Amino acid sequence: MGRIPRQYLLRRLRIFILTIWASATLIWIIPRLAPGDPISAMVGQMSQAGGYVEGSEEIIEGFRARFGLDQPLPIQYLRYLLNLITLDFGYSIASFPTPVSQIIGQALPWTFGLLVLAMTITFLLGNALGALMIWTHTPHLIKVLIPLGMVFTSIPSILSGLFLLYIFAFILNWFPVQGAYALGIIPGLNLPFILSVIQHGTLPALAVILVNFGYWALGMRGMMITVQGEDYVQLARAKGLNPLYVLYRYMIRNAILPQITAFAITLGTLVSGQVLVEYIFGYQGMGKIIYDAILARDFAVIQGASFIVICMTAGAVMVVDLTYPLVDPRISHGGE
Image 1 (tube, rainbow, N blue to C red):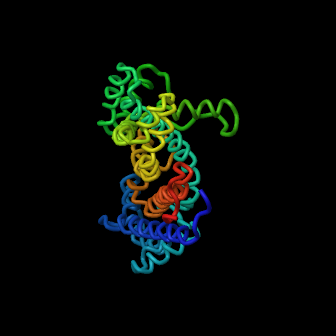
Image 2: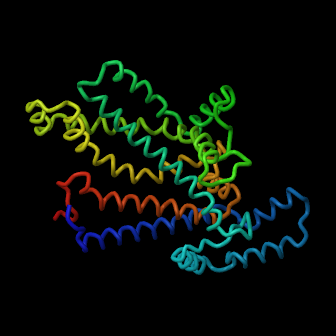
């Protein structure tokens, strides 16, 4: 593999920083394109809940000044970028005076755990099934069952979640309806808490897996069709090597490279698909807080949570790119 060339590493870091800056700018602009003002909307909700709010205009002006919304947009943008450098996302408008970093800190571990579990299972399962669809030694029954199982890919994750919730939570009562763990259990490295987390996270993870593994299977199937006709595969078969060894060493290993790139890129897409899934199951993750923040027009929470998701995705893409030679030694950084 060798060391990573300094010039190549610097180029990748520049691309990473440019991606973060462009994405951060977009998530600052998009919420402000919506008509209205989040402070006015918050006071309006207070009025609907409790009737007339005395001194509402003074309250609105005070909150606008507190959150810097009374400043010109270029000033707001510069302050926003400077705060991002120190990961200071400010305070939540809807849950003032709770810091956004505290809200994200409470939700991020749940989303990260669910994301890693669902994505890992989806990636391994989808690619394995895609390879088996092409492998000549796969039993015919399995080749028939795999496409039948991929019908779930055509439905949205929200419908998948509702289906699983209705069958396994309401009818069979095998899993809890909502939450990340049972009430009354003390969080920590203890068996009751771990079992409760697994039980509560099973259905949300399955809702994501069911609608995504088919894409990996189809992608792997297409790559395997290309690879199986290569000369090195035919030579390995002619040598009489074990079919399983040929499948893994010569076919899967070469066909999986584009899938690994897609694995990193789709992290952000998977998180966006988890938004409604987490909301349906009442799962205390990033998806739920983004959904609630959108409803409340909480700029700070939307920007902070989206920024973390973007950093996770961009960081994953860069790590995968730098570690490509570990998967295929024929690849070197910068073409060296």
